[in-house]
Image (tube, rainbow, N blue to C red):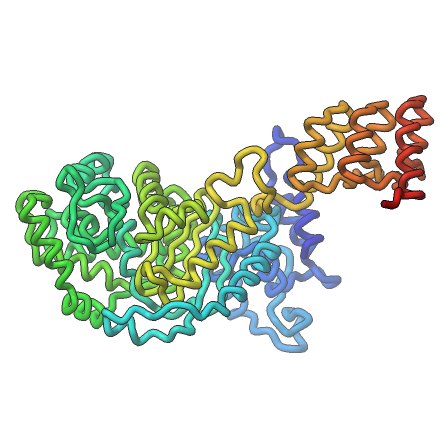
Length: 550
């Protein structure tokens, strides 16, 4: 399948002035996939899409998959039929194949050209799975017990779901078990309140945007007599009062769930009445907060206090799964556009404001530490959920009920920290001279090629400062180009004495390495008549043959 993707990748290299030819792409795709009998296995085609991260249940592939299903119904394969592939599944001829895929050809072409945000999806999946397994061994924390329904979850539940901004999907563990959003509803309702441009500033007349430095349910207000931010209970209650206040409570709830359903791309969303009743039964602190805020005139005029509290408890009791919640996070990562449907759910300003507050206030009293160590917008809930957003790249939902002392999922926190140790996702990982981490948005061959170009170009110009920088970044200074030429070959051939000295004395590069023509760096220096460089190389060889002893 990699070979097929590489062949199709060549399509991208055609002149940009030439109009993209759909028929030509379809023909080439058929040639790559067809068997000696001129037929394409539908299972093989689906596996190629899966290789890039797409699922055959993807709503953007609905027409294509429906077409294949209709063909299957009309031509039930049997072992003696020409309609069967090697494994007895459906196979189709060229005409049928092109007819089946034509409705979704743009997405299919992006998939097979490695034109998604994470081009090497299989490698990325392996790294995510490795982190998942590491975190599974974490048995710290306790399941939330103040709400009886939450206390019934097994502490062994552990699920991770990833959805990229291009709709690439991966899940591991308990990802189809429903759980309530709890505090993870707070950034979503805050974003909804700002769905009209007029409301973006209005909401902050009633709620602030500063970290509180206090417990999430503490009875306190800021110096302006407002809740500190929408991510704590007092702020979320105020936001609930601002969400479609002109509607009756049932209609407000319906409108909110429809918005959430758009964020999930139509995936799992439900309501747990038992959790709602438990929330309301154990809500003394939230009632106290609400009365305290009413005393300080925090609510908009005409607010019905008990109705707003019921609405807030209902929002916390909405259920999702890891699968559907990862799409919610990906919608935020994608600037408010659901990656699974392409529908614009929120305006970009609302998403920007939401991510800003998730980054500074989203993880309870651990928010500052999380911003320091992970550097990504996130929101946690006492059901064991963590919604993690990697802007412009992906959304991740982590779910594991055991919580730490701050109310965050123990496994979820560990996963986030290990993720940014592997990938350059931390908000400040792209600063110059920072530790080199993997960038999943680039093909590894592209990254390797760029490293080769940078090092060899520095050697060609005798730029010791650049070579020193690459060395400190941890790059392999023995790296060679297609012709087997290393930085030492190039520096020796160009007579760059200082560069050669640095490579030999500081980087300890291999002085005996040969290029494809069999030349060593010494032979390059001699061929191009650089005697001083040749002396340096000979001296280095002698030191290697007769190292000084103490």
